[in-house]
Length: 198
Image 1 (cartoon, rainbow, N blue to C red):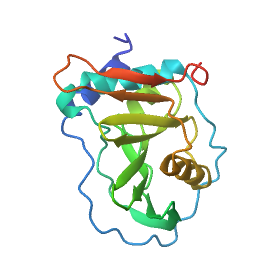
Image 2 (cartoon, rainbow, N blue to C red; image 1 turned 45 degrees about the vertical axis):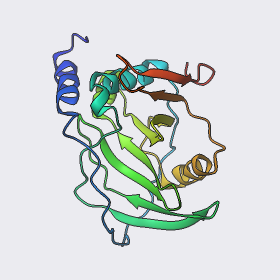
Image 3 (tube, rainbow, N blue to C red; image 1 turned 30 degrees about the vertical axis):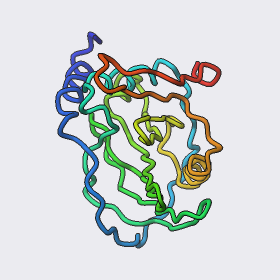
């Protein structure tokens, strides 16, 4: 464990409270009014030393809580609706809040026979450990949790939308993919892209 007391406290808070913090149930969301995209370089963060603590914090929550979770946002709105491969996608914006626990910044809700939800989260504990902001794009689907990108800057919607489209149409490849087989003692890492994660 890290010897920095502030980081250690944040890490412990994330582990113990992670069972309570979870995505809220779906409810109708109003359209955005007056919200514009941020001006950002949307620099990717491709560091194994950032990804591994995120995976370990998730594992520390245990099998029952092995899901991407975040603090419910104070507000959210539908920024845009678009079509991908015959499915309607709602891009939902939540004002950025920096907290030790993961907080929601964007989510892409995909309609269809198999509804999907792609999350863009800010992770304050990972940021404290990395000593830089950490945002990541993650999806849980059919028991698998996939991380598709990490950013060191607040990502612009202009950078997130094409990434979401590529995730939905299946052309994006995850940086990491993990699952926890029922009854096993620990999760399994099926994908860890060592070519991209340095």
